[in-house]
Image (cartoon, rainbow, N blue to C red; front, side, top):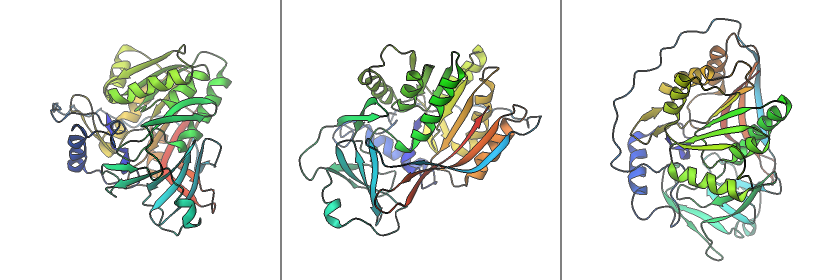
Length: 360
């Protein structure tokens, strides 16, 4: 399913406007003169399928998992990525060699760094100020290519200038990646990981490097292509990763029917999206069924299920309650809270998303 995660903090799924964005992307203009945006590869001629019947749900029996909340997972400035400053509706970030300015609706405070620091930016995203909107990158110093080399904890990958302001990675997810890698290493046995809505594959690469067998699913052929590039760039071409272009929900349903099972499931669904055959996804409608489906495809001795939500108009208490209900009778702990990035200049916290994870 193609995600519209640019609305990550807005929480207002605008299907009509999202469709307009998809139609725009299908035009030759493409990605800020480069590649199309994150997981947005649907064509105007997308076929509308009949809406499938919702998954039949019943309240799970058994003791609810223990709980830990609020849990605030923080990414601090590091050699690979840093939130240098923010304010006046924008953020100044360092992605590897490049200093980048992008809109940030939550930055309602004043900038801490002087203007001269912001003026040193290598790339500035301009255009539609709405987080759904298509825009362009302006390069004040010299024109830059579509991609550039980046690293995460020693894993090489490509940053990308996209027409929807994203750069091919969400650095706040590093907290989840590190936690997952620790679980895989501690298991001391073969581990199978399913990464739904996997985008450009950093989580999949981290899992594979830690020793897991990975299945990576995204509805965007372009995103899967980028993920494969990242795998080769990281020198992990020999690792067992299956790259699958398919609607995430349909794939998980088929895995349930086949009896395929996983030790760790990651899912990062959009607020609104479309699958390759016109399947429509609305987060509040689909999330309970998808969460239940993720439980149903776990192995008898699972390790974790991790949900990240970027654009819901709710607190983390909502997804926390959903996860505890869904994993009733399985023991373990449900941990829920927010993913934040710590600013380098004034130490302010920029919240990026909500999460809830069940850990055995």
